[in-house]
Length: 285
Image (cartoon, rainbow, N blue to C red):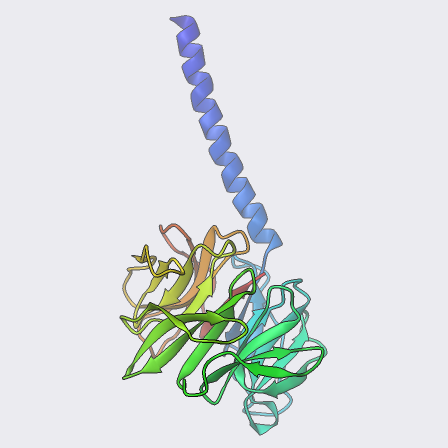
């Protein structure tokens, strides 16, 4: 009996220790990682950074003229550069800067740019179509068919072979996948105004938004399930580098104000990261 009690106590202590280690590991990961996002907390929309635990809030981009806006940040695979959309110079274009906010330069016309897994190519939206641009050569090729307009939110799959995007047609968005070399897109999901798709790091799931909430779905269109179901509006979901969490922004209504939250990718209770101003378009590094 005494030995049995000792074994039970040891098992409980072991379980508690494992749980404590899991919490410590998550806290350490939060300290090592950081988020980039757009915020109007300084007046105009600029690119900011913060750790997932809410610490280390700092402004990265600084416009040269009043009224210029910086939005849609996307971190390069090596973490050294950030793509973003800016109205600097009077017209929306794709820009890139160093991870610390320095050395900002314009790449091309367009917006909503995203990196390929090797960092050599970007996909972007221009004129309602999706294009892929070789950064070294400066050459481009269309990804979506010539007669497909209303496309938005392109993003590479983790293996770089396909691109997911949304298309507005007949008043509602739908999610498609197309070869990164171009071709005929394949419908993934066409209900609830689905848009803003982003792959999980292993490519097994896509997180996307509807008019009000976030859902995840397999690239073949199966296994569709809700991730958020709270009051208000949740948008712009992105998986963490290890796929265990999703960052998103939430507001009481589509008009804002927006705050960043993190939630387990399998579902659960969200944790607020920011407050004050409006914080949108998060990405994770």
